[in-house]
Length: 353
Image (cartoon, rainbow, N blue to C red; front, side, top):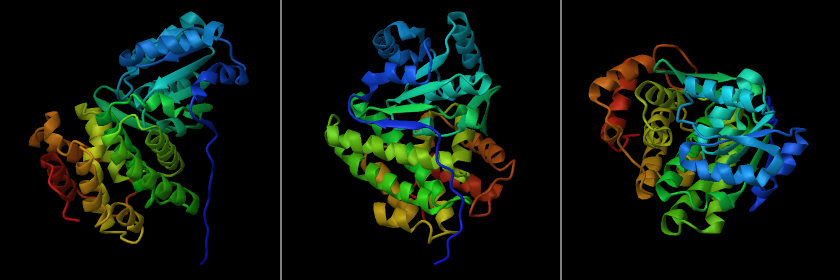
């Protein structure tokens, strides 16, 4: 076997372990910061206040308006708050919405970030920022947006609702699945992708029955870290393009959109690169698309875009947007085939591939 590849490890420092978030103040000081602004969504505002109290004099306040899809206007309010308080770093507590806000702030000001994930989003270990303005979501890559420190504390995910655990976990699986056929894939990211998907496949059904199972929570968070690392290391293709289109232009919920689209996009691409998709069949059974569909259904995932209020006319516009600009994908993309793929996802039909 002949190997030739390029690999660049993430710059983020990873701290993983039960109770690890208790040491957040230590990591603020390691970054040589003294005035942390704690970020969260409105739903986790009370948790943000607890974190700020834990930081004591190292915290200058909270900003609890983080919102799905990272609207630019919210970022601007957060930056104004940080400037008002003289913050020299941010502590992002929560899921992808809060992480996205911290990354958007860092992209504009290079403010240091500590992220404490409480879902399985995975974006905390990537140099990717997706943000929404004027009804459109754009994505960029920059080393400026990669957090300096990520603290994975499985204990903080024990109370994550089952429905959110399911969709967040499937969102993580999507990162790894697309990583298997990325044009810049390499043996290291492939190993991470397979191990991450397997960990989530084993953990999520347990959480369905025992949501507070400590071992399953630990395994799920470990899998999410691996899958997120894949997302940050290689280029994403059709799946993420369509999900960003639906989220940014139609305001569909982020993790749920990934969960619904995953079997359809992976099945579509598996026809072009069946060999690269073999690990998915080995982990989930059957063909890649059908195996992922059956797994998602078995753990209670939403299955149809129509349940989020999308109309068939919306699918026409989504197909136009998703095929407007060329991007790397293992299977040739054309509007007709993408429109048909969206129709299956809209109705919740089991993929034929």
